[in-house]
Length: 495
Ligand SMILES: *Cc1c(COP(=O)(O)O)cnc(C)c1O
Image (cartoon, rainbow, N blue to C red; front, side):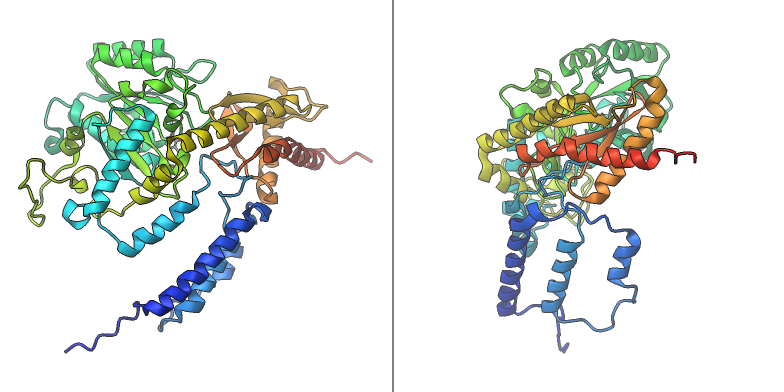
């Protein structure tokens, strides 16, 4: 007889007490988030010192104080991307309903690999996928699944494209001699380099297509490259357009690219990790409203659906494209197949086997905001970026560059320096140091873009807590930091 002592079990009464206390702490955190610094800018050394470097304790400790300590660490030493002044990268503030959904998900812990392991979760995920497709104007009978983020969603689509495009059994024979070619622009996110490398094509398989002055793919150059490669005996197979580039929010000419793909029988993948959800806006750009032309689309619910990390979504035109690329039937899964329509087993749709229930938090956001609520938040984010762009353009020491979707780029230029090629080196250093200073100060958080060799400051607003007030304050915060850095950079007067 094993005398069982489960040191991880928590008595239900204690669970209630701890849960209520944690909920109170989180509610307190959310209600004061506006008055906190975005970040304390602590160094790795400082953080490690707080954690200490003892080895794993032999004995377990009391969960009550443990949870308080963990809450204190998280709430006091994190960078707060839910802060209204957080404009870095493309990381959204997380909907609080998402935190509650994750709590529920973790407590029930469905394994969304097989329908019979996760009946309700499987169907909620399928409904979530259909609703995301509906929102972005993609056919709802598509295949799709939730993954960890944009990179994974793009990888899944890439592999579906690779399988569908090969006229030999690529899954058992692997790659052959004729090089498979990929077409995309330099503005594409680095996932494509990872994919080309990881999936055996090599990064040289990528043909970098030129961009126009608005950083959109040049369709003429695309057509030329494809024809050149075909003549040389290479095998073009995939064109990647981006709907909302990471740097500046540019939208590639999807309709024109789609025509070229049709003419050449190539798979069109659209990376809409950031921008695809803006296709739901009534005044969306025509290319953004043409996602239905793509064979596959990647969308990130942890960006413009404000889901807490992680949540990406891969969509392909037909579900078979996923099963063709990912399904293997191991003997240890006795798959039930008694009905008309076999149940949905998500392990056959993507690379993962055991799968967490990422869909619940997304499903809850979709239902709690509704289409109208989501469209409202996304259009406000874009309107605030436009407001920022105008405010920056009006400021005498700031130079505005681009505004695409909810991204604005600009740089600090001291009154006595004239912007021009001669001064780019100086301005690059000045702006790089200004960015570091702003990030360290912790009042707002910006990231950067590089356009034509110019180092620019970049604000991306995917944040339903941001208001016109934060936007109005931003130009002076940037200029103030810029002035201080410029003072420091000035050579000491010769005495
Ligand atoms: C954010 C982003 C990605 C990467 O997505 P992750 O969720 O960070 O993995 C890929 N492509 C584009 C266009 C993006 O904006």
